[in-house]
Structures are given as C-alpha cells and as structure tokens.
Length: 106
Image (cartoon, rainbow, N blue to C red; front, side, top):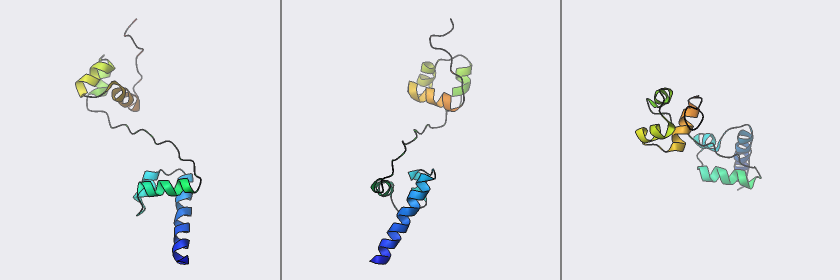
C-alpha cells in the first residue's frame, strides 16, 4: 500500500509541476492514463487555482477572410458560411483581420 501511495504522490507532484509550468489539463491528459476529470480533481485537491479554459476557435472556412476584405459584413459572411455572428467575428480576429468600424462607411 505504501508503494501505491508513493506512486500517487509522485504522479500528483509531477502533474502539479507541469501544470504550474504552463501545460494545460488537455496536455496532461495526452501523456497520462488518467481522465480529464481525474487530473482536474487532483489539481483542485492540491489547492491549485485552475486557469480559465481557452476558447477554441475552429479554422476559418475558405473565403471568409477574402469575403470580408471584399466588403462583406460579418453578418453576411456568417449567413453565407452557416456560422453565428460571434463565431465569424472570432475567426476573423484569429486570422489577424483588422475589423472595420460598425455601421459601414461614414
């Protein structure tokens, strides 16, 4: 039993060290036999304050950036590509597009 406790303590210490060094829980899961929920619980039980999860933005569909550059609005592009306004806006920002001011040309 003591050997199992030492292994658990060593694993916990390693998970904490790596998380504090900047790895995400998803990255820890990839290298571990433990589930996301189990690793999250271990970190919480050791007193770690979890970082907020980053919002994952899927890659922009072909034509989205060019469509915006050609003058289409975010709403038009969202409708064309079957996305929400927010998804479309986040994708454009992720691609480095500088968004125009709202309301069109003044």
